[in-house]
Image (cartoon, rainbow, N blue to C red; front, top):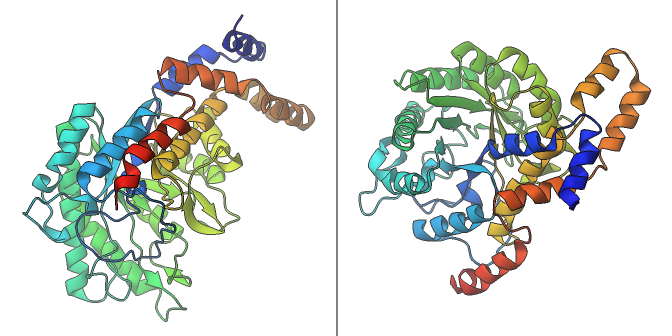
Length: 412
């Protein structure tokens, strides 16, 4: 008997079907963010990062062109098992001489990304880019009191709705379009309400753009603070949840966008109680929204447990969102996305039915013991079998190092 068969029997003794878990994981799509490959640089300008976003490190091999970024994504995808989508930001428009500002983006500026996605039979998710641009005035975009600035960003949002519809039609896969703005103030504001009312007005105007709601899902993401925006953010959790409910769009939670003592895993069940769909950006904040590479850590596992144990895999849009320039960027992609998938598989291999029964009987002693025992079952052997069936190498570091030596170090 090989190690997988042995592990399968151990799980079966607890009423857990490892084969069913492998089949279920193979059907889960993770939306992989493109901006790990070039440190959130994009291709539409040379503006410095803004909006409380920082990328630290100078590891060699950053993608400088669309072709380089696509090649690096291909390399990462070849080492990531399971179903994937590509998550783009609007700043990754490809112009080829027909440059347009963000308020005038058209499908032609993303045709190469669509061609890329169709050739690989994957979908595209999308994000308006409300940062790193000269029209971010005094740290404000959709909430700006300057009507010229506000309208510019409203037009950008409208164009992105149209582009999301285009992506869904062209690829044949649903497109999740996520709205996040960095707007806020460094110090205590005199007026907290007016910026939020302007933001609300802007969102209303953006959402008036026609789109196919059966295949485009617009989400709204909150944030508690950012660098230079420590005292107040316009798009707080309360605002974004309230607006999502009012407008009938999808709430999105990024687990780096809350106070350090808040856990997104604890919030998922509340949102599922009131929303048909919810969305997640899975990251790892260290002391603040630092977007470290996702690890197979407690919070990632708890997030996955909440999705799986509530039978919500078809109700939760799962995406990654982090960027680390201090290590090999392709390894960062592969490690982080694999850890999301590991966490989902780990969750699928928990004796949830038994644990729920123990909770309802108030047998918390047995619940604790069973929960702890489940942590040390032969999970690694089931994960190894998943990689084997997906025809993906288990030892990806040497492959990435070889790619670094042949390709990345030559980018100067």
